[in-house]
Every structure is written in structure tokens, then in C-alpha cells.
Image (cartoon, rainbow over all chains, first blue to last red; front, side):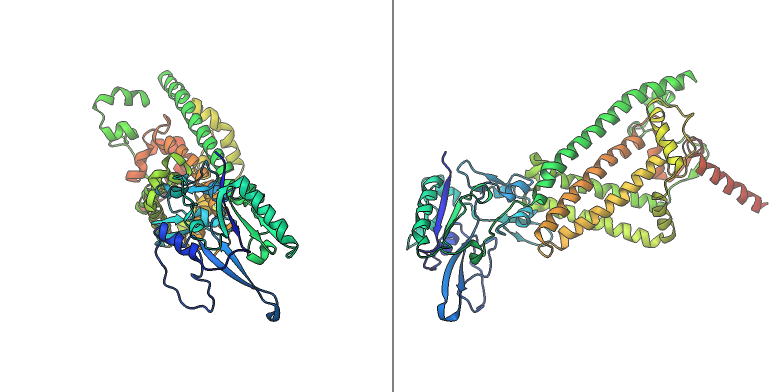
Length: 262
Length: 245
């Protein structure tokens, strides 16, 4: 099946945060009590109950101030560090390309929180360990039943669109070409980052202005333990069990024979 | 000894069928493990088994569902705190002995090479002629003790990083801690299998299990397996007797 994706055109966004509300409503996520921090950005950060958060960036000198809108949520990477580190398989690649999540399998270890290059997944629960991770799942329940994600559906200016990744990639590229005349730094983010993201951004300035990593990577530390230490562990345990088994068979016979001979 | 144990098997009580024969009543015994050492051993055995099992839920994906809800993480943390706390208490109560014991783990020499050369014929074929006399801990036990200390310290440091400093330390540091925690587990698990096998199943040591229960070992066993220690004990015994007179 063709990979599905979301395209966010930051140049069309008006910062209404309807998507944020729609996300909370559809996914039944609690509202969080916050305090006035002198910005209209709210809540302060992603959390286990906030999977999508809109951002506001004030860029440039006061006389020429630009206000840019950004979006923070799971980028649904093709090379996903969270899937690499998830020990229980709770995070996995859906056949439609996005990073799906089976909460029932989550052990709450929080490795995904540590591994994500975009710092997206969050855990909730007590410090002693009974907790779960949470993040955007691209409205898996909606898109596998012929609906579009809640955030996309709610977007009044059409800054968000959902569809086949190939088509959105073409549309995004065309839009960037169009923007380049006015914004030379305009870029389509997510085309090739981490094997291609399933959430792509049309940006009018370079990704770092939007707080996005210019060249995100899956950290080596995320792959070491499952790709190297786990097989080494199995091999070591196997060698030891075989060695002990062999010892048992040989020693049982030889040492008995010897004591009989005595 | 093993042959006579087998002929008696029908009348042997179940614990002895599982863990080997106890010393024969009336046999001369030597004190080998103090009560505190034995308690530390069994606290470690129980907590480490808990830690292995709950840790395995993350290591073996098939068991992933057992870790559901993070209950296993809770047990993992409790077991970790119990064993580290208990070891700390033991260390304080037995300061002198503990420091000596830790020093001993790092004392390696020619005798250990000789042990290593004689180990395969000894443990597989029961050939004793090449095996040099051993101390209270033989080289193999010393290796296990060194791994317990080394990998144990690694587990405590990486575990504490993940348990208490999650979110405080950089992301990469956390993942490296997790990786080294897994590596330490592999070393400890492999050696723990060897440890359990040797103390319970190996024909040359069958029955030695009970020394960690009762604290006593038969003088005959001590002479055969730990000659240096045995001689020391005999020497002390003579001295004590001399003083009595």
C-alpha cells in the first residue's frame, strides 16, 4: 500500500491551534492547566496528553519582525530511532509508513523518549515506573477507516493536507519552488531526512529557524543494544549452556568411571 | 561418592535429590560461610533472579507483554534497591572482611594461570594431578567474584543513571547507559548459569550447595578442593589446641 503522510504548509498556517484542540478531542486527551508565560504558545511542551503543539517564532529585528508558525508532533520517520529502541515492539512501522503504537505492549521503559531525534514521545505515570509512553499515531484509527486525521480535518486555511506521500511530496516541492522567489531559504522538510518523514513541512526559512534539526540522525547508542548486544547476549548464553551441557555429559561419565576404578 | 549417592536415591529426601547429598552426620566439618554472608548470598540470589526475569521482558521481545503497564519495572526497581541497600549494610557491618574480599578479587598471579591450564581436564575428566592447591576461593570462584563486583558496579551506576537521572542526563548518555546495562546483564547471566551449574550439578562438587545453607563444609571436601585454606584452618586449630593446653 502506498505510504500516507501529512503535509504542513507553514506559510498557510494562521496559528489558530484548531488542530491542537481537534487532536485532544479525537484522542480523548486531558486538558492541562497552565500559567501565563507571556506567549500565546500553550501548553509549554508536548506531553503524554499533548501530542501536537503549535509554535510561534518571532524572527528578525523589531522594525521588521516576522512571526512564523511551526508545528511540533511525531514526524513518523522511516528510519525511526524510537522503533529501533522499543524493546517490546509497542512502537512499530505500520504498513502505511507511519510509526504506529500499541499502548498495550508498552512497558513504560521510556527508551523512545531518550532516542527520538525530534524529542517527541513522552511518558506519563509515577516515578516508580508504572507508566506509558504516548505520541501522535497519525490518527491510525481514522486513516485505516477512510477518514483523514483530526488535525487535518480541523485546519481552516488548508495548511494541513493528508494523502499519499508521493503526491504530497510533489505538491510540497511545487509550493517551495513557488515560494523561493519571495523566500530564498524556503525548503521542503522531510523529503529525505531519516529515510523520508511521513510528516513534511513547507517552510519559508531554514529548518533551524523553526527549531528543527538540520540533519537529524538515529544515534548509534540507539542501535547498539538491540543490534549488537542482544545477539551477542544470545550467543554468549548459548555458548555457556552448550558448554555446561557438554561438561555434564562428559563429567558425569568420566568422573563416575574414575571413582568406580578407585 | 557419587555412586553410593545414586544407590541410595530411592530413600533420599527430595531436597538432596535436587541439590545433592548433605555431609554425612558425624563427618568433620569446617565453618566456611558466616550467617551474614549466607544471608547476603540468598538476598542477592532472590533479587538478581527477580532482576533477570523482569529485565528479560525488555531483552526478549516475545515476553514484551509481560512488561505491560510497567509493573515489571516497579519490581525491577524494588529488587535493585533491596540488593544494593543490603550489600551496603553488609559492607558497613563487615568493613574489614569486605575490603579484604574485594582486594582478593583483584589479586591474580601464576597460580591462577596454573589453575586455568588444569581446569579443562579437571572439570571435564576429573584429573586432579595438575590442579594446584586452592585458597578459600579457587581461581574460578575468584573470576565469578570479580565479575560480580565489576559488572555489579556497572549495573549499579548505569541503573542509577536511568532510574534517577532520566531526563537530566543527555539523551545519548541514557541510551549508552541502557546499552552497558544490557552488556553487564549478559556477563552476569552467563556467569550465573556457570555458578549455579557448578554448585548444584557438577559431579565433583555435588552437595556443596548445602554449605551456603548451613555454613559448614566437610573437611574432606575442603582438603580436596581448597587445600591452602584447609591447611590454614588446620594450622589455626592446632594453635588453638596448643593454647588450651
